[in-house]
Image (cartoon, rainbow, N blue to C red; front, side):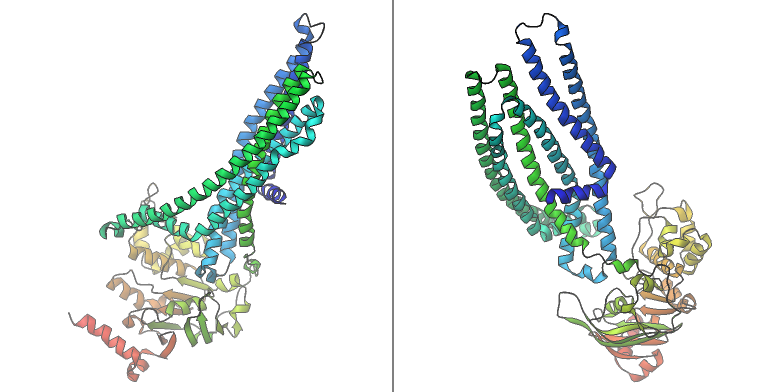
Length: 587
């Protein structure tokens, strides 16, 4: 079953290179059998009575032998190169599937460790296993085809030993199955630890962490932690390696003993005259070759089983695919009249702690609604619920009265534009970093330039070495690096480029200086013209222009209203506003 699954997987990824490798394996196997049979025929002619008196008597056999050796050599070269291509295509096929599946699942899955464990095994381990699967599968095919040729040779010389040949590979099959399970179990158990180890290594070598690591002298402690994780991995690997070595040593001993017995049978038959000396020599060579092939095929079968166990993880990961992500192609929502959050509570998957409690919030047409509150009060989580990234544990989010849970996510998301608090800095051109929010309009230079101008970053991008076609990373030739404030303006431009009726701005000025921040918020009404906006800010002075302000505290709406209304109530908003204002005036 595992072999059949492997065949189907490789065939789906790259059918033509797979056929080429199979043809090369078959040609090599046939050539091997012809080489041995030609050798047998040549030996018989040379030892016949009368013996040939000229080369013409053996020339045809020598020609067949030479041609077979050429075919075997050519098949080996073709097989090697085809395997390399095939392994790359299969690995890419798996990576493409993993990327598509990861892109289809609910965003909430990324809050779940089990999902990350499965993603690591299907993605990282699965990619390596898919390459190993190709080599093991083809090695198994090669050994099987070669073994058939060798069996035909032995059947023609000493057919009496054929039933006993089955026993030669049995010890290796049993050892390989156990070894595969030991290796898979270890990798399964080490998945969370390996993820942390890889993360620490990335921190040690990547640019994004380099400044902080140097200033805080973190290289040695992080390296020590990384070393401890690897030491634990190495210790457990050694334990498994010893157990696998003992298993394979026992299998080798049992198989070698069986081969020795078969060799004695062949030699005894030659001594008794039941088999010609030349035939017995060919039989001994064929038996040695067959034993080696059986050992190789058993090892490949065990390794194939190990790779297939990882592919089972991939099949489990594939089951997470959400087919609804492809639904609603080309559809769009009606213009927003009112987005209403009603009685929404939320807790993260796998936890019982509720982070939002019975939230009610309304965003009307062309309204700017602000969320304020202390860190950890639930502002970003609520924004993710409005954006359809999370589904409420209780309550509903509706668009013009329609529950967004019933709207295909791609359709809903086409009506949104977002500036996330952790906006992405794509290592792409400046143009792509803006137009990526609506990639179908990538060539609309005027719209790209207009979005950059409205976000206040046009002057910066136009001065780059290649203007909007400059790569925003110094790791590329003629690339350029932007400051965090400039990157944040690019993120705002990205959101403005998309002509969406609802824009969500989560701390859109966190990286801006005070003057740039003030300019951005002073122009926010203009920037959000003809669209509704949900604005999150920790600076109370910047949300005064909002039509309504919601104050969150401990996952609940503490109060809401206009700036003037909230100040007149002298509640939490007024208190925090005065505290922030006093902080600016004290100096």
